[in-house]
Image (cartoon, rainbow, N blue to C red; front, top):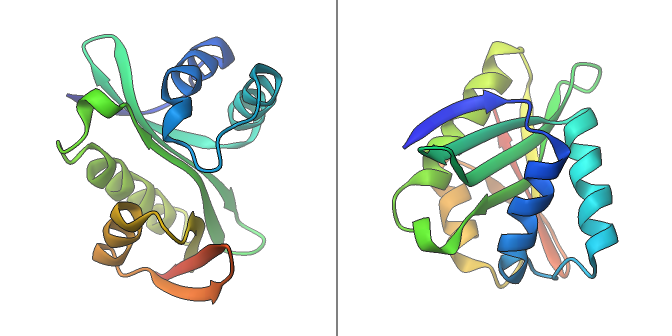
Length: 142
């Protein structure tokens, strides 16, 4: 596996999310929403990627606010056939390291409350639940 902070093209993000759409909860409703989300990430997020040769197999995407001294993780996604290889774990390390490099104070994310594997991963990094609703808002102070 190769890992990189990358400015992925919208087309590649779109293809990746289409391939992984069944993983999202709630599912992205249609192709247009996937295009809009891919464009938004391309324009505003830093994306940490994992590649198997040239194939994009996992991402962590986050927005970094110097003004609020906060990183917001918006997407953690690994292609189903590459799960259980610590890809999400390694990408999270890259995102946390970037947050530290930028002198941010905290990292936040939302996760669906029934997504126990994701919640377990985030807790390994010291994220705690701050708000409970249909989603958990989790936070890590850095």
